[in-house]
Image (cartoon, rainbow, N blue to C red; front, side, top):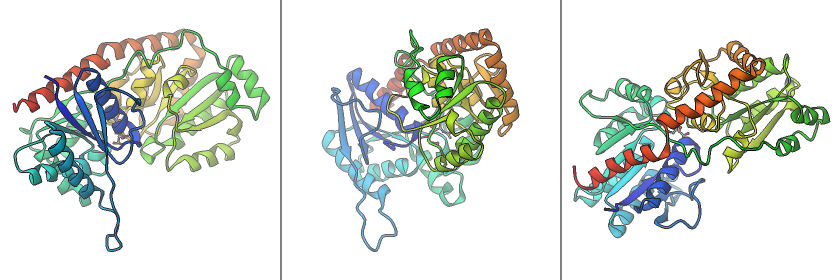
Length: 390
Ligand code: GMT
């Protein structure tokens, strides 16, 4: 039986919105009707797909409000959409304010519908949710949801511990997934797009067509991603090996990162691409993925890199070790240990065969554990059970 599913997510920022969109699209392709209820079109939403509907949320401001009340606007919009589109279930991504708004909508409707499926993603528990100013509402919103999932065992443990969720309250681990057909190694690598990025320095262009190793990092440039560490790893590597660094994404720490690159005379070897629609095609041009985050519930960006056959060098933080198998699909070190991370990169540069083997192991691990089909089916079962009232 196809379900009528509402999806609430942040449409433009980060992994939770990407995961929500990819899942929504996959469910729509399986015949479910998927209604995105968001402030804008989700970034990865392909236009023109059947079974996908979009309902905008506009948080209207008013001079007496300190800021536009998004949570209330969303709750109010959800009431309309659930009622008029007959939604069975609302899948909310990120605890606050999304699960809170869904709870309010359900209370307003007063008939036990819709069922609320909440997927926690990371900072909604580790940073925002465990901050004393939001802890009570986060905890309450989680406990009021009908079913809760997290992408890793690490985040499940942190949710119980940091938010004092009673052990008998079930939280299921459903890992992030990746479309391995979209994120795959390229049959033929044409570095001309890459070379074009480094137009400022003909020597670097020559290196790129020669044997320069391409390091890549993809993120939303927030402090938790430790962009300064990405650059420090690169600084150490570039001082002894022929390498370039490609940075995909944008966010609050980008200017500081650009300043660091200029100060350390790395500017001509580092390309800042900003937000990119086709991240996968940049990954195919790279050799090693850098991922030194402070904390990471899972690390969708590292998963997409591994699917593309890239070894990952990064930090052993949060759920990263559930995605990257240390010494098999990459190398993990303590947070902030940029010297050790740089040494691992150098080892991979010097041992091309090992690098190749790690890339193969990375893709094969993704194939075993994180394929789109199997994990979308896990979500589909949860949704169908909830819709059936189980
Ligand atoms: O928690 C966040 O920072 C938000 C979220 C996002 O929108 O970027 O990222 C998290 O969700 C992803 C999808 O589940 C995970 O793969 C990321 O590891 C996670 N980020 C963090 O935990 C920092």
